[in-house]
Image 1 (cartoon, rainbow, N blue to C red):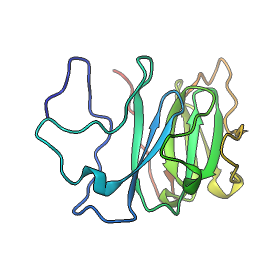
Image 2 (image 1 turned 90 degrees about the vertical axis):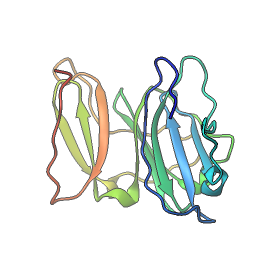
Image 3 (image 1 turned 30 degrees about the horizontal axis):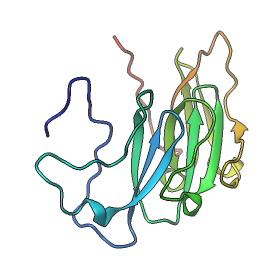
Image 4 (image 1 turned 120 degrees about the vertical axis):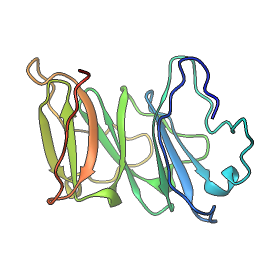
Amino acid sequence: LQLMPGERITSVIPMRKFEEGKYLVMATKAGLVKKTPMEEYANVRKTGLVAITLRDDDELIEVKATDDTKDIMLVTKDGMCIRFKETDVRSTGRSSMGEVVAMQLNSQGDYLLVVSENGMGKRTAMSEFTCQNRGGKGVKCYKITEKTGNVIGAKAVNEENEIMMITTE
């Protein structure tokens, strides 16, 4: 895959076939969420395909394969989180406030683990996040302080999972 200068791989999605009723859901740093049928990626050229058009100050942060039955969780660096039904996402996308740092699906785990830049974390049951309508404000999922720093990521986890955190060094 030929990459432009400064371009990097964001996600790797394993798939064998391009089934009808399956989608790729993409989230950007600025809060744009786009859902595209998987079959639109069946005939990829050597040079690739444009999957999403980004504004100059935006970047793709996450891509998930889904079946239009899941709930999507977006978490911002300011500790806000919103959960909404995937069916609420139109092909034109939706926007939310704040810089989005993570996107997870409710089917990926029983808990949402939120981690801050200073190595602190908090695990909350997925069931505590109720679905909101398109354009909802979300809820506070992590309290930002000088000690914690901003949220840098979130992952759906289960009780038996172990985690590894890796620093820039």
